[in-house]
Image (cartoon, rainbow, N blue to C red; front, side, top):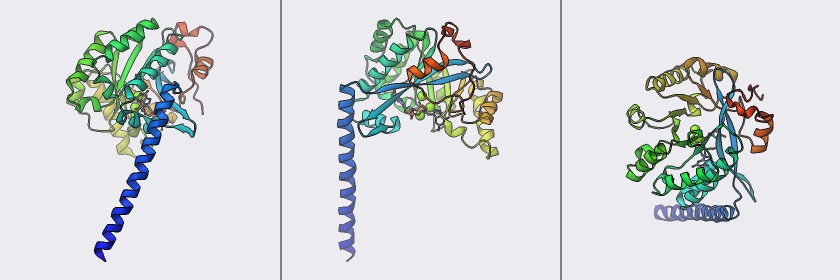
Length: 287
Ligand code: C2E
Ligand code: MG
Ligand code: MG
Ligand code: MG
């Protein structure tokens, strides 16, 4: 009897595995087709200067509206990474972000890059070719990297980062506080900016310890001489708390959700106010 049930559970396990596998394969095939037809788009989320409330830049975020509805980047980015598609996906997103950015003179654009993309020794060269193609100034671009890049002891990733910097492009550490990135690694890499993960902000209203941790983390990063952006700002209280704690830039639904390029242009960047992006628009919260 015992043997029987263990056999049964083996069968159940395999069936689960097969379903999951075939779903993964299906998604992978859909993604290949989407990339082939260049169906992925880019949304732009405003980043706000904490003191003035003005728009100071945007983060480009990949969007995929598949035949079966929208699929979140947290789902399709890992699929692309596993399937060896992240290079082509990343270059499509980058090209679209830069092409659009070149129509918003002066605006800072941040693009997320997978640590895997940096292992390609032609990454920095490709990046430069894209900037040249659109005459986009390198100092207007920030590459956002997650801490995966710190643990990968891939020498090529480090070389790519040096090459990116040598081009005058900025490098930010994304999602700090969500994992295990250490103070030592922050000092070693000397990032141009650190973005604090939204999990650090989520509970500060009701959890006094969470509030202290956020405050201390902002001050810690500032003490290392690195400017901070706090992500996931959903309330006025969170915006005010992060600003007072010393965060210079804020990002989150309180100010704006990620927008299509048309929405961003219409809401914040029309009337040539783009000439001075710092004054492009005073951000009235959207809710
Ligand atoms: P991320 O780079 O940390 O981007 C911030 C995420 O938080 C975005 O999710 C954004 O829509 C969401 N967000 C912004 N404000 C708020 C808020 O106030 N509250 C909450 N709850 N969420 C907020 P999204 O667009 O779903 O992207 C998820 C992640 O997928 C990104 O996290 C990034 O790691 C990855 N990703 C997105 N686009 C790309 C890409 O082009 N390349 C790569 N390699 N990764 C990407
Ligand atoms: Mg990011
Ligand atoms: Mg983040
Ligand atoms: Mg993230």
